Picture 1 (cartoon, rainbow, N blue to C red):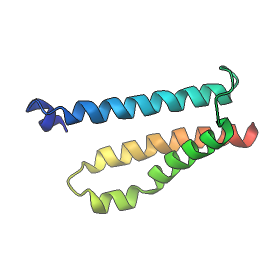
Picture 2 (cartoon, helix red, strand yellow):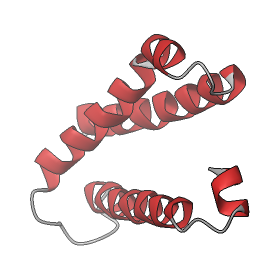
Picture 3 (cartoon, rainbow, N blue to C red):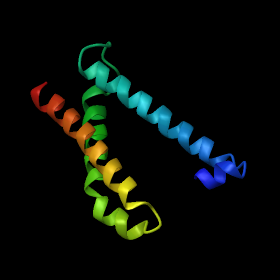
Picture 4 (cartoon, rainbow, N blue to C red):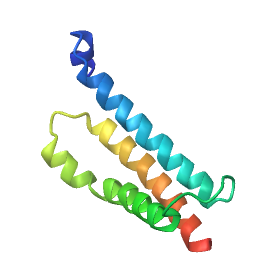
Length: 97
């Protein structure tokens, strides 16, 4: 993606913007679930789905190593650890809440 951006390709910007927007919406759902914002539509289902996506992404680490051999192993490890931590926090919030 960095090479594409250096060439002036617009796709990395579009992809990064879409991911940032999705994560911003997910954070609104997390804050709503924590009671810091008013309840959002489909709050419980949304939080369960978001939690599942984070945890499935973390669990997909071995598969990602296989299907993305050109990716940095270090990147895949750290990104998997980060999404697992976020998913675990969401899971604890659902379990306790």
